[in-house]
Image: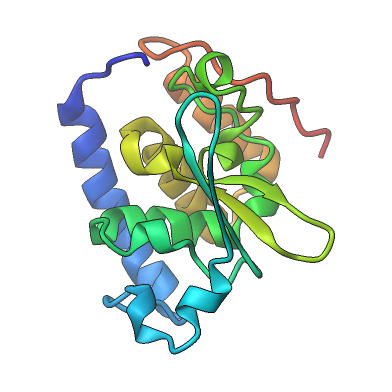
Length: 178
């Protein structure tokens, strides 16, 4: 995986996380995100598997049920996954610039968090985003821009411009037409 200077990524993630924390507060998130808080948590997380590149994937019944692999993660990572779950329609149009297109076959930043949303509404989560500051940074920035009312094209153009140099080749994400 491509290595990045941590100072810029960590600073941006901290700032974006603080802002996302206040944004997501209205969505019912809490500082305690352990699946142990739910009586049916073990029932909701019915499927765990590993991909060929080693990523852990877990299936839950819906986007509102985050994967159990987040239970031991820092709140910042939980916030990135919570944010991703609320903007799936946008993240599917946003490339990731960490190199995961080549290393993991991802098609967009959404795949760093969610491998698939099935027709029945169940979700296959991917733990790639738990280990990648670039993935989290992009998802949190997109969340903030969407909250600010930016259009999909404005968000995409901003992300492409910011990550075009100094980062890995982007995922093969098509440009939105609207």
